[in-house]
Length: 262
View 1 (cartoon, rainbow, N blue to C red):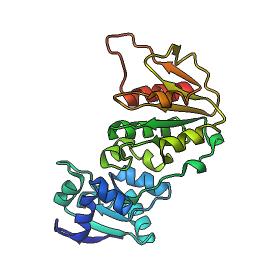
View 2 (view 1 turned 90 degrees about the horizontal axis):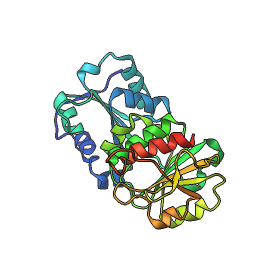
View 3 (view 1 turned 45 degrees about the horizontal axis):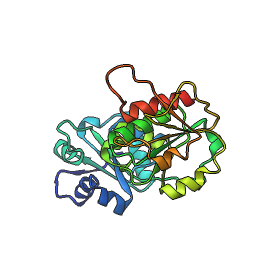
View 4 (view 1 turned 30 degrees about the horizontal axis):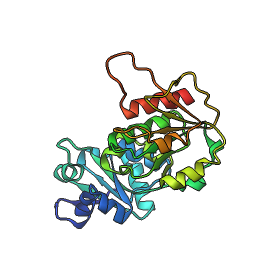
């Protein structure tokens, strides 16, 4: 079970995969790139077959690659063996992974979320950094969260940088997109606590009440929670700073809040 061999950088499939580094191309096609046999295997195990599977010669013979090839072919996807040069161009790395998969993006509708399905959900307002977003998705997966909800204009969860940071959790955690007004209306019926973080808050994050299911709402890297978003919370809390730094990286702060809530 092998794919056809491709050696040219001008091959149409190679050019199409390279183009997926651009958000406009991801938006137009509904596809995204995931790098590495581990991540591709995670996807296959969770029922997401690649639309396109690329692999280098060094990956040949690996049992997990054979499984990925079988899943791709069963779903009528394209399997191609490529050169190291092509893998480097597709991933934009000097030392690329030996396996690259192209998958369909999947968003969950806000109204389809089931609050009783998990003890904690995460809301992110206008998050800008794809590395932070990917790390938060990975942390949410590790803690058993029900979804990550992107509120307002956020960075793309299916960018190569964000997907890399998820380490495969992009396939395990439901991702939701919602406008601010849509989120505010939906939040009104939330059955548990909605908890946000503010530098000016007086309640310690360890002392807050996290009635299940808890919804942890975090602001972006520059501004934190806006007044409108903070007003949607049942309680706003602070994470104490004991050194000279007056704030934490967004992904770190969100991880602390997720585990406080769970």
